[in-house]
Amino acid sequence: MDCPDRCVQRVEEMCPYQCSDWVGGSHMDANNVCLNVSFQLPTLRAGLQPPPFQCTGGVSHAGSSISCPENKSLLNYTKCRQIKVNYCTFNCEKYLTAPNQTTPTQDTSVVCQNLDDEDPENYQACMPLPCSMAFHKAGARAESAKFHKALGTEYENYKKSQVCKQTLLICPNICSKGPYPLPAHVCFDNNQWGTGMTYEQCSDPAENGDVCPGDTLRCIPRTQPKSKKKIDAGNSPRLNRLLATGHKSNEPMAGEKSHTEHHKSSKPMAGEKSHTENHKSSKPIAGAKAHMEHQKHVHRPSVMRRDAADVAE
Image 1 (cartoon, rainbow, N blue to C red):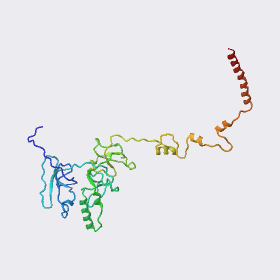
Image 2: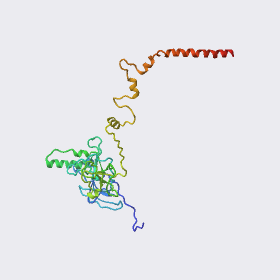
Image 3: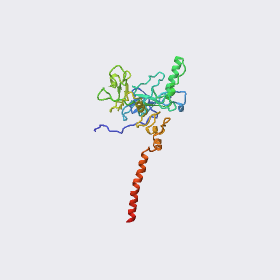
Image 4: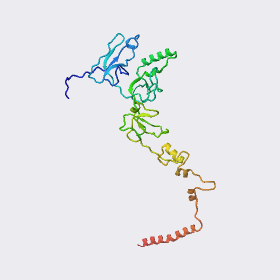
């Protein structure tokens, strides 16, 4: 393309810390920013200062130049290239509060996520910005002094945290009705017990100020219907148990015996004999024995005659 003034693109050095608070026209998608590296706690030496988190100024193009505020005795800025804000590793398990801050919701685009696996109660929870334990501890102290109450411990949730774009789940099913083309996020009505006829219908969050109204679920629209395998078990308790336990074969249920085991373990009643024993102990009745003896005498001479004939040959 034609360019009147060609030049080498200017890219600042990468920021030493990630921004989680943007002021003065800065935003999380800006390339070059002014990172506030002023001492947050002037009474502490540099090695004990909490990590900086506030960025100001900023431009969208890496080649654009920015001017940072003038450095003063307790106010210092450094020009740098902003660390990219990625999507959260996990979806928000819940939302926590912080002193003097607005609690995030499913509609909050950027959050601070707790990644402290030694805190199972709040692990993967999402919290208000900025991602600075020192900032929220100072807010807790101010709130404690103002309202004469004990110092809270909410700030400890920021001990191991990361600023990130909130990750949303895929919708439970496809939208039965909704905007077209589908936006990146939709408000999914997942209340099948609602009074209205809007179950599994979707709406565009932009139509409501980028907020999902009521108890609708903000989620990523599904493109393929979720398979639903329904088996009508009726009133059969045994079939219900088979479906619940995942049986696929004709294995006997608890308390039941297979056909073979039943015959093996079955015992004859008093005065009765089993089918096998009855065959073993059965004796030929009168007449049958005489018939067998007669058959012996009938066949024996013929055998002898054949033997004699063989000898004669």
